[in-house]
Length: 169
Image 1 (cartoon, one colour):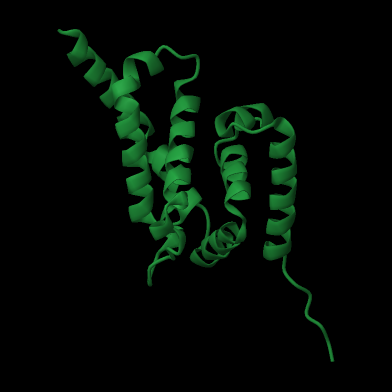
Image 2 (cartoon, helix red, strand yellow):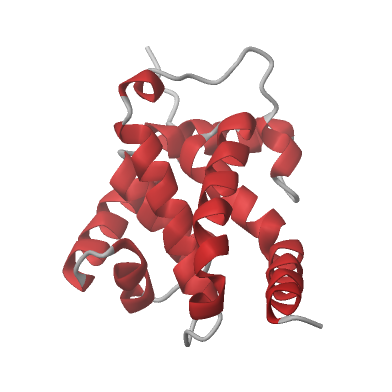
C-alpha cells in the first residue's frame, strides 16, 4: 500500500468518525444546515493537503475545530453572507436531542442573539466541553477574553431564557 493510499484512508477514517460533530459545531455557529455543510467542506478541503503534518500534532481535534471556526469566520466576513437569515420552515430541533421543539427553538433563538464571538466561546466551552485554555488556543484569543466572553454570553442567555414574571395590573 502506497503512502498516499494510507494517508487517504487515515483521512477518510478521521472524517467518518468526526464529521457529525464538526457539522453540529458549524451549525451552532451559523444556524443554517446548508451553510454548516459548506463550512465543514471548506474546513476539510483545507485540512486534506495538510493531513500528513496535522495527524502528527498532539491534538488533531483541536486543529480541526479551529479550522471549522476559521472557515465560519471567513464566511461571516464575506459581505454576501452577512445578512443571511434562517430559511422559512427551518427545523432547529432536528439536531437537538433531548429538547422539545419549543425548547430547541427558544435555545437557538437565544444563541443567535449572541454576538458571534460570544457564540463561538459558548459552542467551544459548552458544546465541545473545552477548558478556558483550550478555547483560547482554538480561537487565538487570551484566556481573559474567553472568561469575559463566556460570562457575558451566559448572563445574556440567562436573561433571554429565564421565564419572565407575569406583572399584575
